[in-house]
Amino acid sequence: MKGELTTLATVARLVARKQVLPQHAVAIPALRGWWHIPVAMTVASLIEVVAVELIVPWSVVRVLLLVVTLYSLVLLWGVFGARWVYPHYLDGPSQPNVAGEPNVADQANVADQPTVASEPLVAEQPRRALHLRYRGQEVLAVSAIGTVSHSRGFETEHIAFEGNTLNMGGDGTNLQIELMEPTTARIAEWPWQRAQCHQVSTVRIGVDAPDATMRQLARLVDRD
Image (cartoon, rainbow, N blue to C red; front, side, top):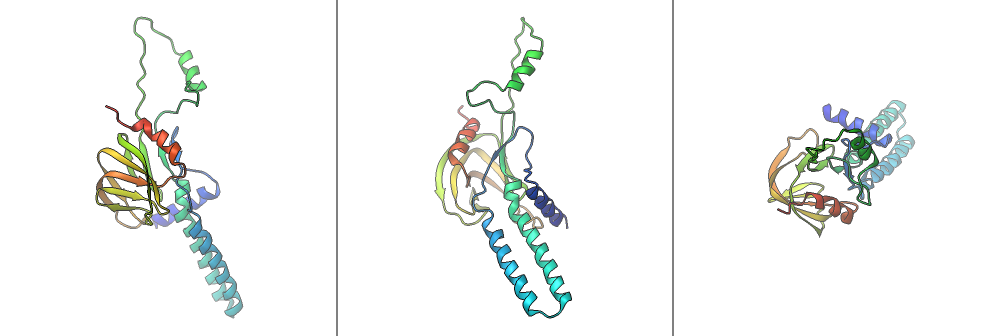
């Protein structure tokens, strides 16, 4: 029941075009092809509804089948639409603009603060972290990355463990992330399933803009 309600909430957010992201988070889209299956299933279901209307003579049965079909389609769009509603993201403070200058809002906040000549203020920025999600559930959060590289893969599973590697593909992967240390990843294929937890040191993901994502993830690479 909880999973069903979560799916319905996802549909509502999808219709409202509202993504679920923390404040100042930067989304990492991985949406390529997410709509193919729900669109195909919607078309097939509508054809089925028309066929039932023509073949089945009992109106009660026709109405019941129509309601069940429409409700199933809503849940289907909720399951697959979670990729849009709950994207991967980088959290932490807001990014500087393209020119490398502080944001205007940040400059205003600094200007309003009193300065102390004898002891300069040094603001330590919190380190950003990469959060990977699957169907609304967080799979992995990591703030220290060893390397990030292009690596084209053709994994057909949306999410799976392969030894100490976490694959998040579906339509293939295009980035490989080597973690600084093994980190626990948690996946559940469906909301009602018990989650599997594994230690992973490598993550392969498929994103829409691999070059831009590499530049974002470069901020997490530990160069010590």
